[in-house]
Amino acid sequence: MRLTNADQVDLPEGRLRSLELPLHRAPGELPVSFDQGMHLRAGARPGSWMAAALRVPGGVRPDELAASWRAVVERHGTLRSAFAETDEGLRLHPLALADEPGRWVEHPTDPTLPAPTRAALRTLLDAACSPLESPSHRLALLEPTYGSDPVVVIAADHAHVDAWSLPLLVRDLLSCLEDHRAGRAPASRLPRVGSFAEHTAELATQPPAPEHVLRRWHEILDAGGGAMPTFPLPLGDVSAPRPEVVSTHDLLDPRGLARLEARASLEGVGPLAMAVSVMTRASASLAGAPLRAVLPVHSRHQSRWRQSVGWFITNAVLESADPTPQACGAAVREAVGLGSHALAPIMAPYDGMPVTPGMFAVSWLDHRRLPVALDPAWRAQHVSAVAPTQGVQVWFVADGSGLHVRLRSPATPQAQASVGAWVDAVVEGLRSLV
Image 1 (tube, helix red, strand yellow):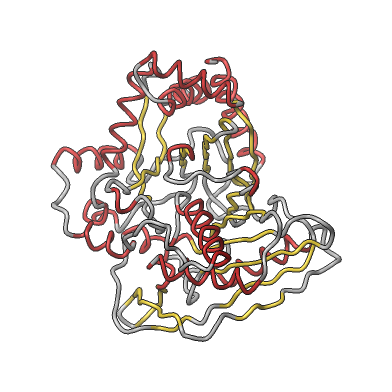
Image 2: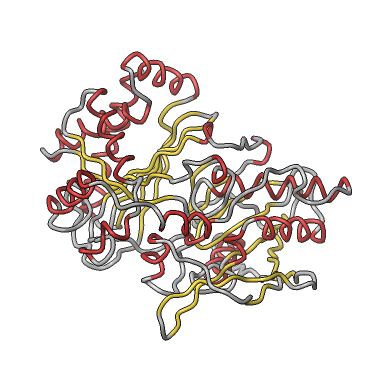
């Protein structure tokens, strides 16, 4: 599943439509997770969604696609929920599907733009998938003007999905489509799933984090002046969000990735630890500082959550000063442990997670370890929104085609020089290992 963004996604020109499903507010209230609450602090805004785009070989009829997407929405509770700002603060309420079918809406393109269909899709998703929309997700269908297979786009605000969720949604939609065509009950071949709201409620009942975890979190935050880690090299003036610059690099082909994993195995660690070793050396040589970065970790620890859609990702902090693989493996294990406890009480003294300009985050996702494998014929793409940024984000993605990295940084001359030098060192270091 190739990483890209709304300005770089590979799309043909053609007719763009999206499906409006009849969802209305239902009685009751659902719990809001710590990370959802932090995300919604910024309120309604464009550019906070993520999406999956895929080709459908042989084509698809809009009516069967609509029926299949409806079944997916019925399957995953987070897609039947919406946030609202009330006099009492942020609330999450359930939604119910009405009996009437959905409505396909046409989205005209502007032929004066360089990529009219891509621009129209971005405008659509920025509006339909804003955090306070009800619902804040949308299914789109792009039918090419000439020849090629149609493209289906599944998008949702980040409050309801994470990177793990996207291939699950692709798999579920296509499975329901096959069921529809075969006359079976939709989703009848898919495993049962729990809802993200259930996960949030369960997390809230966990005992407090042990004293050593609290102490370590406070040490980490105090080392950063009461804030999460920042990129170790100059970024220029990022006191206000700047336009983003996004680049994607193919680091290793399948054979190279296999060699990296073999090298990691000999060292008694995983491939992420080897990448941390390289990043630790890069930070030391270029900045004279240890590697300190936000490390997103997942909370799908129980089997019933592995097939569920939601925001099961929270943030930990990775600190690494010793580049030996064994020390880096220990640093990864510590970070995972820090992210395995409810963060709301830990972050209460800091008024929530203390984000600061220049924040530095490193993500690692191995699609081969997810409970779903996507057919290469679908040419699936993980599409991020485009939005101004103040920090640096690095995503490593491993899949059947090798190891890839995507970088997002502010469009300042200093940031481009600093991030460019750092990633060059990381790329060279990783390739030298194999």
